[in-house]
Image 1 (spheres, rainbow, N blue to C red):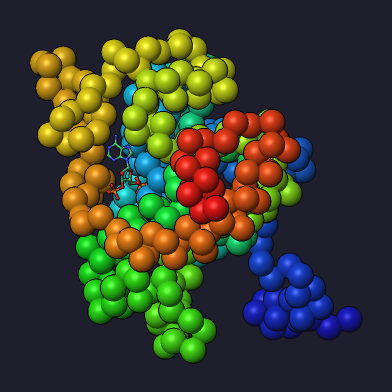
Image 2 (image 1 turned 180 degrees about the vertical axis):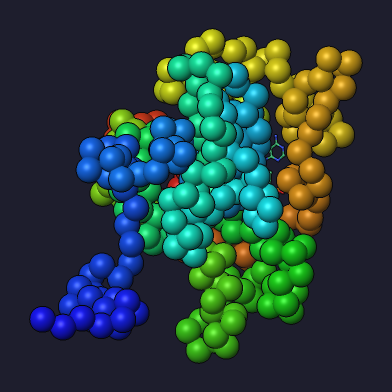
Amino acid sequence: LGSAPPLRLAEKYFQMRPDELNPLWGNPCDDIRHRRIWAKNKRCDTLPKLLVIGPQKTGSTALYTFLSMHPALVANLPNPTTYEELQFFNNNNYLKGLDWYLNFFPEGLANSSQITFEKSATYFDGDLVPRRAHALLPNAKIITILISPSKRAYSWYQHIRSHGDPVANNYTFHTIITANDSAPKPLRDLRNRCLNPGKYSHHLERWLLEYSPHQLHILDGGQLRSEPALVMSTLQKFLKLTPHLDYNKLLKYDPKKGFFCQAMSNEKTKCLGKSKGRNYPPMEERSSKFLKKYYTPHNTALSKLLVRLGRPAPQWLRDDLSTAR
Ligand code: A3P
């Protein structure tokens, strides 16, 4: 019987079990054997019961802010590098382990009706996210926000441009979205990052492989923008939150911002920052036409999926499909 130093042993182990190279974290509280060896000073009971998965640029920050106003919902603590988003399930933070994630959730909740939640808008289209999220949070409720994928793509382009992305600053929106497969790689990569999240049905089907439809709430981002109080009322029912708050009293339309903002006690409003609700020129007609055609098969598939799930088609989807014909 022989042995080897730990690193050599580990190498050997993963040669024999390559399927275990990528970890998949489960909840130590769910398995008595894991619970027993989980250190006493570590928690696992404040894991989120609600995930807002995005996609990016659909109003996810507004939703996160409105949800945070509810006394039964406790948001994660901020991440010093990615601010309110933890981005645990979709990138290398996952490899930092469960402790890393848990430390972003407050230790003790004030009462048993409180639940923790987090929002990371890149979860929606992350390949590994549904499987990883389900392994850790099988009973969580999942919220996604959808707006017209063309508008989402354009808003995303404006977003990365303002973050100084060199490729976005060198090419027009139209050049990016129409780049073909012989275009330079950075341009193709940017095109994919811009357009792929908008293939909503494809991504939703991936989430539905892991989570059952009753755990998934599909929210109309157009309505979140124009009638946030109504959206928040439906959402509170879906989440079975108490008390049921009247967001008509908590939110107020700010004509200067052009969006609903938090109503403050002194008749003032507290709006999201400048990067939410940016000012930029309208999309060029040719880009709008191109995207309508591009997204038609994806929007048609979404429409069928919503029928299958017994969910209403949002106004933007009916508009996008009617003008596409
Ligand atoms: P624009 O800046 O392109 O207008 P996200 O938070 O997911 O990044 O989404 C940002 C988008 O949220 C903004 O895109 C804006 O249109 C939309 N939005 C919806 N409701 C909003 C609100 N109450 N305040 C600010 N932006 C809001």
